[in-house]
Amino acid sequence: MNTLVKGWFSEISDELWPGQCFSLKVKEILHEEKSEFQDIKILDTETYGKALILDGVIQCTERDEFGYQELISMIPICSHPNPERVLIVGGGDGGVAREAIKHPAVKEVYQVEIDGRVVDLSKKYLPFMACGFDSPKVHLTIGDGFEFMKNHKEEFDVIITDSSDPIGPAVSLFQESYFELMKKALRPGGIICSQGSNFWIDLEHVKETLKACACHFKNTSYAMAMVPSYPCGSIGFVIGCLDEKRDLKTPLHCFTTDQIDKLNFKYYTSDVHKGAFALPRFAAKAFEF
Ligand code: SAM
Image (tube, rainbow, N blue to C red):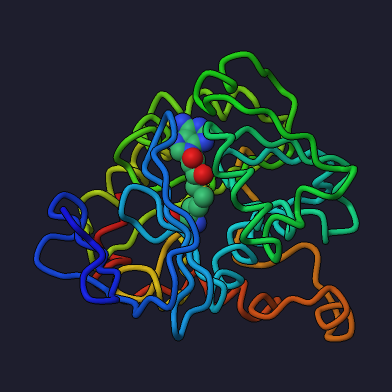
């Protein structure tokens, strides 16, 4: 399907969000290619700045990427008493790495991204996110996150899965077997946080992913962030913790307002952390199982 018509990019997907689409007015197509794994576009848009599009789906835009990157990183990291070793799966734009290294307890960040072209192109066109790869704390591997997880046991305190949507190379990252592998890859007390889709778009799919998580983590929860360029303007996170008693809603590490400003958090605060777990009644009810 031609998603670029008369200067507009339209995010059309009959599989993911039938009958609706979000459109952005394009100033310039900065890059287009088919990598080994997916179709990659980088656009300069009129009102959302630079945008990364994979297989026709918006991954992040310059205007609002921080909301997603800060919450998917800081909710699990600030919910861990000593988050020294962090693993990021996906996240080829570098935004999650950029956030994860802000936390003073984080000593090392390992990252496994399947598509090296996303990393190369983000470094060229999206340096405001790809700057995450500049830190000596970040160790990047190009490979499949699912396969990577099979070879790592009791190594990480926090695992963040910043994947694309559950089509193409990311399908395996929503399966129950992936949650089982992540559980084994965690050190005691560890925590995982995965891109968890949107309950307005597909409540059943979110429920299934939460159930897959709950099969392996007794302490499972769902949080959400407002991100206007994602379908329906929001996105959720599926969180699982090995420590059954830990209250995920209450951050163990709270940044002062000064620290928040110095670290350039534009969305995350301890209050936002707590509030992210407050769900509309219909969703909260659907997730009671
Ligand atoms: N924030 C975005 C969202 O929610 O749509 C995700 C952004 S990030 C660019 C997603 C990355 O996941 C992509 O670069 C993609 O190549 C990577 N990815 C997809 N499947 C993967 C897999 N099986 N292993 C590792 N990385 C994967």
